[in-house]
Length: 290
Ligand SMILES: [Zn+2]
Image 1: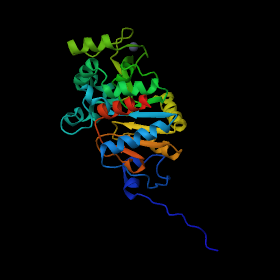
Image 2 (image 1 turned 60 degrees about the vertical axis):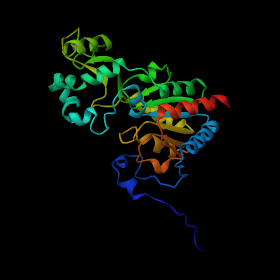
Image 3 (image 1 turned 90 degrees about the vertical axis):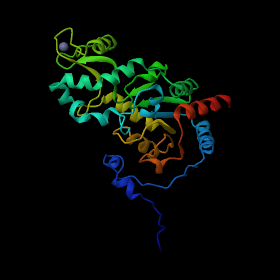
Image 4 (image 1 turned 60 degrees about the horizontal axis):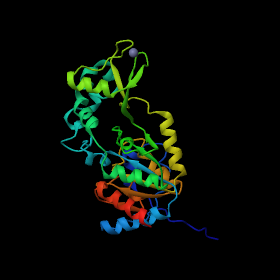
């Protein structure tokens, strides 16, 4: 008797994409899922329906959530900090140890933007969804602390944050704001009050280990979710870009709300191509109405 065969659709593009060079993706079977409508309102209606059904939503946010707050997207063309200076020359752990002044010169405009930034309607909409009990965790690639400023309770900052600053020599750590404000005025890198070494903000540089407990918590939250909402992430940076694939593999729905295309669009149930500072508040408002 002839065995039943199951038609499996795979995407060559997906497998050749650098995003899929990690442990999660190469073995996964890529099914063609529901394709999103080109019509923004139709996408929002579909996303709203999924969010209404969901009980455990985990959100993954990227730079696109912070650009409406005036924080430039590192990876955007031309205007991004990354296009002016090669970050691999200044923002690696080794470069920091050897040339801390160069690192601080590079991050000076960013530090200024972040210290002055305020959350925008996208951040507040996510806080609202958390308070409704819909969102259980927000995993973010952003280091700006704007989810905290918007008073979201459970934020997993997998690339660290700028709230504290630490000494790589003696381990001393303290609040960064006074140090960074002094640095913005003088241009002098912050020094450890205990040993005099240059201190480093607690953001994760290239070549540095990610905070293990935060990454594990993000993976656990993803596995427990029944819906992942990606907001403002281009899903090009590891390991965050693994998480939506992990969510789908464990049976979760996936909504991607970001302006540009992502390498995981083919996995999404709904794609919302719109400004997150408008689309997320719309979703929060209509969920609150139910
Ligand atoms: Zn020290």
